[in-house]
Image (cartoon, rainbow over all chains, first blue to last red):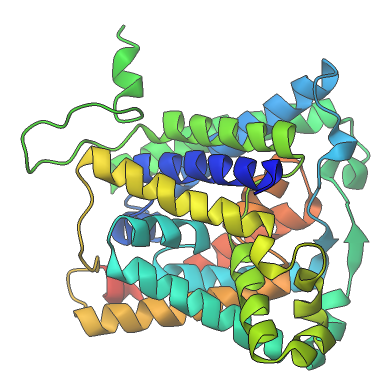
Length: 180
Length: 187
């Protein structure tokens, strides 16, 4: 096995461990996000985004991390908008997303295993029926577009804005949970 | 102020009693931990986390095993056939790690149980049908969007990708739009 695949397993173990620790291997807990009774999904996701965003920003500033060597997910406006809405609908029906379904299944949850199976079937079927979807899939391509590029605002300013937004959103999330 | 209580549930600690599972970690602490894992992936591997890509690579592997010509002619699956092939894809090993990590965490927390988790008014059959259907719909969405909550939302969100933020907003909107329709499944 190559080093990079060994690294992949190690990173995956840490990823799965953290998700399970937060309770994200339990579908009813995740579903609570969409009925505003348990906002763990939002809190975990945004603390993680803020942490990794600040880390990447400062490590790049200090010369430890070369951001040009990190793959930035490419933007395809319409496919990501439509795919996102579909994905969200599937998420609330399943109660788990692809990553958390693996954690749920690993913890013995039969519903987690079925989400994994459904996910595999959905990807397989869509892949096999790809030809007529291809034009839409390739449409509205914007490459590795980032928010600082789009808004013509310095990288650091967007980082500050996201942190501020997250801190406000966390306050709101706490209030929403108390009311539920 | 005790900092220890913030980290309760994050590491290995003995659960109280035999039947009571350990409490979940604080979501902000767990989220910060997840962010550090993601940051480590950026630094060590030059890429973020992912999940749906592992399913896509596995699907490409199955199609290639059934019909190599068909897989090679399919523009969606063909990309996974280059390099070491679909079964040596980085994300497939990462997701194997997720399964191991999730299992170990559940094991030491006393949460390892063979059950079907569901809402109070939904039967086991209905829950399993929903799990499969929801998974399949997410599969279609993840193919169109080129990723899921891990690879697109989390990873690209931290790197400030426009498509990632668009996907995240669309996914939460889709989920909140659909939540009242499937309320009976969870409430």
